[in-house]
Amino acid sequence: RCVYPGLASFPQKELADRQHRNGLHGGMLWFDVKGDPIKLMDNIKRPWTLCENLGATESIITACAVMTHANMLKEDRLKVGIVDGFIRISVGIEDPDDLIRSLDDALNML
Image (cartoon, rainbow, N blue to C red; front, side):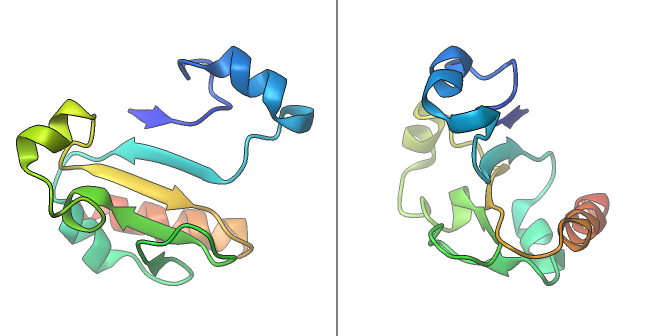
C-alpha cells in the first residue's frame, strides 16, 4: 500500500487537488513493506538519510514503528494505522535516479 496525495486512491484526493498548486503534491509519502523494516533501514544507502525529522533538504527515510513511534504500544500504533512495515519518506534535492536505485536495491533485499 502506498499513500500519496497525488494518487487517485488517496482518501482526500479532491481536497489535495484544490489545495496544492499545479497538481504538485510535495515530496512526502508513506508505504507499507512486507518484511522486516529494520532490514530495509540497514540496507538503504546514500543518498537516503535515516532520520526522524522530515523537514530537511536531504531525502529522509523513517521506519516509524521502530523509530518515531517506538514508544507506543503495538496495539495503539495499529489503531492509528502504523503497521510494523510503515515506511515514511521525504524526498529531497538529490538526483531522482540515485534515490530510486538506492530504494529499489534495499527493497529487493527484503
